[in-house]
Image 1 (cartoon, rainbow over the protein chains, first blue to last red):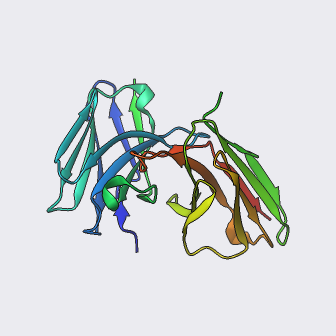
Image 2: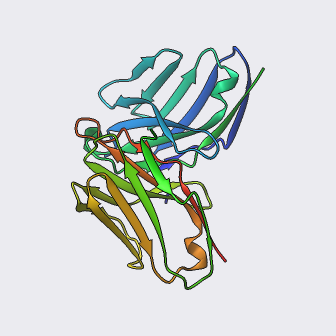
Length: 114
Length: 113
């Protein structure tokens, strides 16, 4: 019973275009959400986060949108660059992010073509 | 000057053996974790230590025993390895004020034959 799901295993976009990665969750207790990026043979690295009191958080080319009623979040990357090619994990936590106990999705592999 | 380092990177062993994975962080964080990435690619928390004290212990077989000699180190010992233990094990750390922002090591690929 996966509480965080990333239904698209892979996504391919052209360099310069927008990449949209999606994530759905089922647990209403989740109130803090994060995206991690992972390159092969490396550990995941934190990318961006959002609290449930917000519906948008932006950091440079990366924006995360949260739709609480739909229990859905998305990560937008604009413009996409070849170096963005990686696996992206969505993660959720309760306790307003004051815990390192995260529930991860299974990841979406993004390929950005030059 | 790797922030979170774990060794070994690869571990191939026979069923029934006992093995250990070591983790060290030089970030000054007070909390460390072990996560397991299974064959379906989900990352799942196993354990968490805060200042050498166990604070999270998920439903993990007691063949897995974490040990934290100090807040910069968290090792994972696995007894009587089974085929199903094959996975990638990630160590991570975080600090007060941003607990959910985990810093991960590069992982240990464990293969049990």
